[in-house]
Image (cartoon, rainbow, N blue to C red; front, side):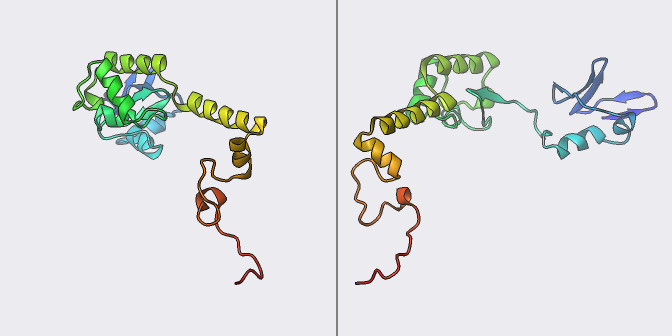
Length: 181
C-alpha cells in the first residue's frame, strides 16, 4: 500500500480504513509509523518479510486445530488431521454429501463448518487422541502387565523377535567389547 499526497492508494494486499490497516482481510495490530506507510509497496514488503503474504487470495480451512491444504482434494486434505485416515475421510464426505473430486478451496464456508462440526461430534482427533493413547500406555505400565513392561523397557510389544532386528524400538546397535565368536 502506498500513501500518496492525494490519499491512500489501495493495493490487492493492504487497505487503509478508519480502523487502521488491514492486510489480507486480517487487522494488523502493530506499531506503524507514517514512514512505514510511505514508499511503494512497504506494506506488502512487511508482510512478505514475516511470511504472511501470499500471491493468491488466502483461504484457510482450519479444522480440528489444523490448517488443512486448500489446493488438494477434500479426502486427501482431511487426512492431514491426526486420527483421520482415508476411510474416515471418505465417510465424512459421504455423510455430508461432498463430492470426492472437489477441492477444499471450492467448499463454501457452510460446508467447512459442517465438516468441522461433524468431526468434533463423531471423531477423537489431534491432541485428544494423542492424550488418550498416552494415557492407555501409562495405564499398561502402571498395571505391570507384559505389554506395559515391554513399553517400559522400550522393546517391541507385539511378539516380534529381539535377538536380531527390532532396531526401531531398541535404537542403534551398541558395540560390546570382547564379544566375538
